Image 1 (cartoon, one colour):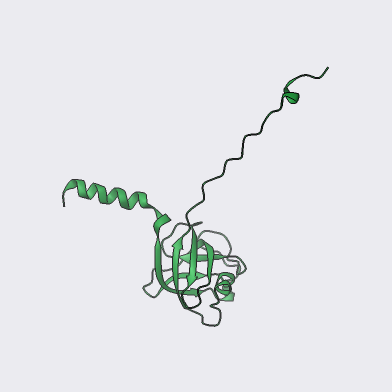
Image 2 (cartoon, rainbow, N blue to C red):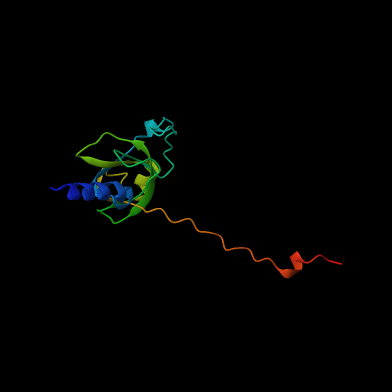
Length: 137
């Protein structure tokens, strides 16, 4: 490999970011006993929120998780860490697990993909009418 190839590879890997991340694998969900415990991000786990743990994605990344058995999907926010595993790709909150119909099964095969951030929408400029700029007599 020449130097140019190494630099190009580095730039592509650095600037592609997590927006292009996808993976397939097993998902599990948190046991109820973890409700109220601190997550790696510092917030408390709330089983009623659509959150998840991932081994490497940045906190607050939004990920669409699709249950490949039934096609149901949910968007979750990463707020916790899990140990890197060749068996599981994500741990879901109980609410997220319920949304994709995996409570009975416990673990299911899923596809996950980062949801790109929506660009901030700029409000339309406010029109100033002539009546507001002219002093009234």
